[in-house]
Image (cartoon, rainbow, N blue to C red; front, top):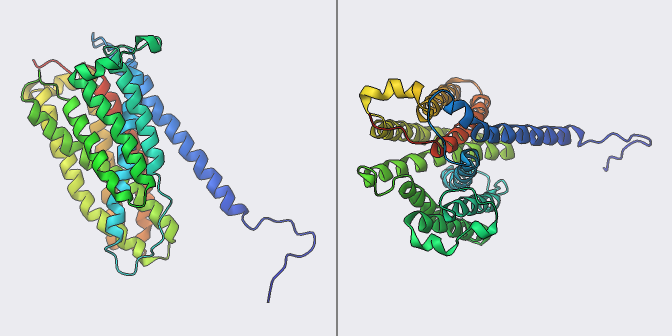
Length: 336
């Protein structure tokens, strides 16, 4: 029997769903805007009273690096959690629409903006004439910047192809390029620093992007889908190791740049130290939310109640990414 709407009944049966979708879109837009303000407005706060001078355009550089880090986390997280989902017996084959092509486009634009800064001698160009594209091939930083631009372009093509899993290779190239860029050859033991950054960035990308995609997967499958709880449980087990990797490499990197006897002082008297302290506090809050979600996942009558603290964890991780972008743009503290 076919049910028809009574005459004059103009109620929209999809109204609540549409309102919910609009509310989520507005919430995401607000969060993205607030996240963008962290690297843009953060330098003035971090540098106040330190006597340090920031490089020109430090806010813009921090914003571009934030976008670049997010563009890495989104596709890597999708590939990571999709692999976990395939290990769950009886898991639905349906997947959320991939955000990897959009992330690759954003990463390409961010990498292009950063490359233009390198092409002008790390100064903000006043016009296209100031950008020496050919000069990028003459320096180490320029070659790494070009590598990131090309890698995001290739990652986008792979994401649109029939084998999106291949994008892991150009994304890995971006991670390696970022690790090398962060530690120039003039630095003390640059290869050790690059190795720490490589592990740190990889673990952070899988942690942030993986959790965001896992929650999208659960929302698509529905709250009653047992496979959703299984995927979230698999992710939680690996996330413990990812958190340990982020913490250990972050601590070692800090001690390389700020010796143990000066860490406490530099955490409050330098812009880099203040931003690092803010990041540490945020990561501690994220770890607390992760433990709360894991407790609910294992002990609650309904394991999917863990989604509430997990969503808060995603928001906090987004702020961590923004603070990390700002951290890369601030002057590195002097080793006392």
